[in-house]
Length: 326
Image 1 (cartoon, helix red, strand yellow):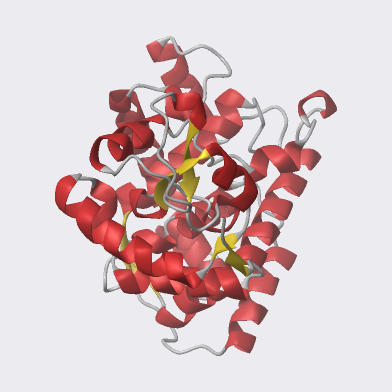
Image 2 (tube, one colour):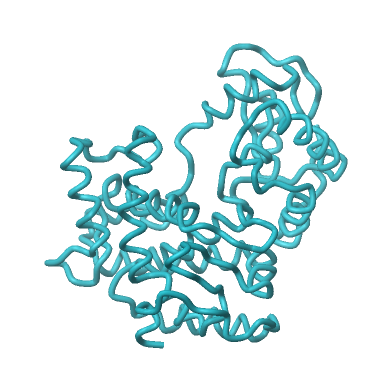
């Protein structure tokens, strides 16, 4: 759908879609992915990361989406030095913006997004939002046949099609792997071989937080000093007390306060990539109700028990076995 990127706003062209119809749209998107840049893959990754940050109308703000988008591209362009355009002698618009920003603020090469000061992160989001809002939101909308979301550039929102939203939760793992694979394939084709070591691994971990220390500080301050899983009294030595993703990070691929708990080293290691038994889900409901009253944190703005329960159920559908306990 050429020219969709030019529109200021667009509505969903079809409100109800079957899974078969959505798979057809998704497959066509990847099959026809002869893109000039990686932008559409980057936006898809940003949307997937923010699936659980929607409000009760399935709305995301541009600020939410482009925070993830900025992080993706900073880490690809500055940290990994990967070209985002299918022409070797030119730079994609986002590359140019990031390189200029890096030079302006004297940021060394290889610095990851999470190590930037918060004021620079926010400035970076504003710059990438201008590029993304101008070209990418409408382009992805068009490639998805007007069925993934509706958007308005003036009020800066994206609203998921409810059928697509349910689909992306249910098949999150598959769609994430497809997006990562095709993004890595693009990068392999348009970058020098000396930059391509473990490129798929780089893409898969591009949104992973470098450190959970900030979350640890909040949890340690407001939580009981016991392992969430086995009840063992936790050590105040940071190396012995871990922050664990209740729903495994490999599925949710984002860090949210309502999904993080303190655990002992043994439980965190043994649980690893597994889903804890459902009795711990009930415990999480209680923990989160208490925590959101004491630890004021933006992550709880879009939290609900139903959202966490759905995430737990969809993780099970995606192959995460619901049987781990200490």
